[in-house]
Image 1 (cartoon, helix red, strand yellow):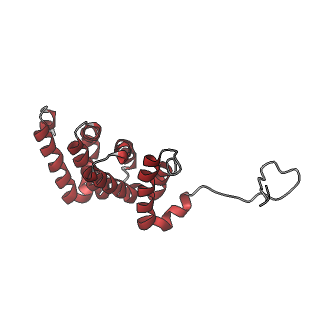
Image 2 (cartoon, one colour):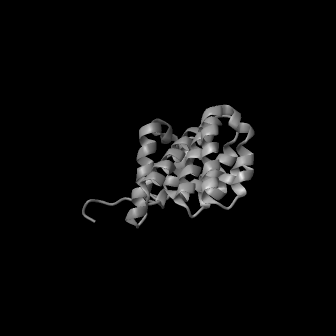
Image 3 (tube, helix red, strand yellow):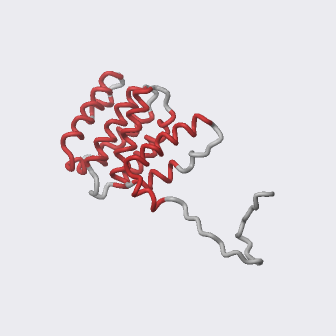
Length: 174
């Protein structure tokens, strides 16, 4: 981790790849390192270089899959806030790495937390935003569709009464 401070991209990429492979193989022992590594991953996920962001997302994926159910949800949610803006990336490699990281975070945080992020952009006025959010939603629907039911917004039918102010109805002729 100390080598990441060297201001050369190749060295920093090597450190990120080493962390990614390490978290891929150590599994639940990642719980001991997650708080120490999170500032480094924050920096990588905010970097201008797309390779940094791609490798940072791969590291977040392996890290989040390693600490499932170990009580590290606070730092994973913090890392999700750094992964999420990269959903709008144009490079296919970075997009795939971001979607992989989001999938890992769906497993560790649960699909309903990610659903709250996704619901905000499903019907955005900008087509590009909608496409990115629908891509994430469809991915979640495939892998965790049954668990997402609990996170959908509630819809209760109002009792049709004359004094009911919350009953909005439209006939076909209006």
